[in-house]
Image 1: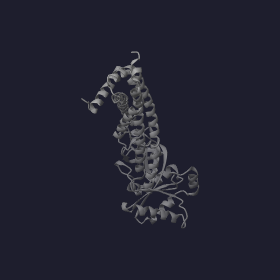
Image 2 (image 1 turned 180 degrees about the vertical axis):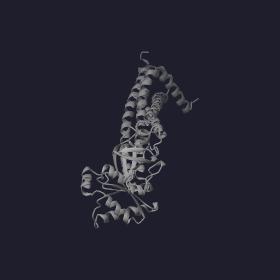
Image 3 (image 1 turned 90 degrees about the vertical axis):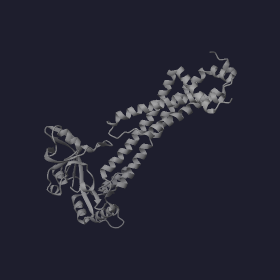
Image 4 (image 1 turned 135 degrees about the horizontal axis):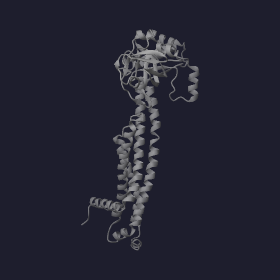
Length: 415
């Protein structure tokens, strides 16, 4: 009675398992090589996904969904020469430019001039080093979400009077007021005292940039503390979100009028839109993603070589056994299935161990890397599929050698 192919496969896998159990150390070493390759593949893919996610989140937090930014220049994908030309050609954006934009906005556009620098912030004998201090206008909270958790943002009156008030991030608040309520407390920035009127919600770190280190203050108070900045950035948004495209055009037209640019003359400023930011982020993630396949391929090739060598040694040591089985009627297909099953079991077992190791590494690194790391199921499934295919590929040459051996020569081999 002819046995079903399924039964032949089951017998082949059973024989492969018996062979592996007979020489566990050799199989373990080959499995470790595959585990290292799969773990490397999964970790690299997870890290690249985390970097891409981090870049998208940083862009969303920096701009908001409907806001755009008017700046002296935007680096973007410019070459060094192009960037140098823009820096030389484009004038600084001043408070006069911002006042002109506000005057012609006619309530259809909201503007908030912003500048930024790092500085130490202190309170009660404690110092928070290198906080990100931002000077801006009260309208910023109507343009983008700054993540206010408690208290309030400063008012237009406080902005115009250069009142020394501040809104601080959670990291700053927790470091300077570990056992007290920071709201209403006083911090010193640049040797000036600022009263805390608002606390930001915990926002975490994105792409190495901590949004919890922020300190916001009125732009005029910022200028009195640090001096007038060389140039400003201007956050802007249409009063009606549906009018965003036209708002960008009006802002560009207003800036061109302010700088007396005639028809056909190039802009002497840049308008950074959410779409441009997303395009730039996509370009970064594509470049980062291009590094993943070569790294994974090299790791898998090294593991394939090890598994191939292990399976080949197994076939060589079992040559007489294979010859006897062939002589009493075992077909080539059965020997082929057994050999491929042996290499595949080793590879898939190593792949499972690699996924487990990658999960441990990702969990340990997630809180320390500064980017969100999550080992997702596509990366795990892809690692296991790669391990299985690598096992088949690794076992192909040893299997071909096993089914091609001369039965008579095999029977003459010593035990």
